[in-house]
Image (cartoon, rainbow, N blue to C red; front, top):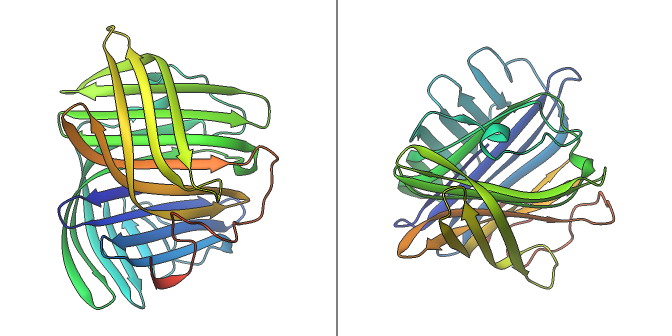
Length: 289
């Protein structure tokens, strides 16, 4: 997964690729938006993998999307939307379950790493080429994952720069497991959250955030509050799990950064994609907000 937001250029993007190599299928959600309302989205789930989708050094979906795993370089080639981007980590990636002091929920991947960084390169959308210099975040997992077992999630990376990032998450699982966790990394030093409470103000579609807030206490006793303001969103739909990737700005005191507030609200365990999302792109191809 890669997410990024260039606050100066007003351009944000998201790509989550999951390959189920044992059964030869993949899931991919890719999207880009601009501040003046241009949108692009491509989302597929459970489609067959083909020759060339996976090797020791790259993963992708056909000729449309590819990531070079050695260089963390992304290529996208769709009608009306192209991208050539490279991600650089701000610090060594970390084992997410260890850093958040979180037990591994049933049905989730056994190995999961995350890290903040910077995304640079170019995108071409609706005939316009834009240089990108963005704050971003990425993760990578190995092992099985039961998407349908997630009944509600709030997943929120906040990146302010090489010196500061924060992450909060809260989830409810089909097994009855639930919890809220988080961390801060300041100047390369990680601090787990001992207390964390995250809330989302939702639009009447029951999934698009109008705002988000997290209040937390770190293991060193420091307290903080994160505020999310959305710029736009991209709907992720994979194996019956639907979430809005709300991408925008985050504020912590006098610091402003990029924010990806992912929201899933599915207490009854439904599996159909939403018919309408008010704060996120749920279409296919180019569109306008």
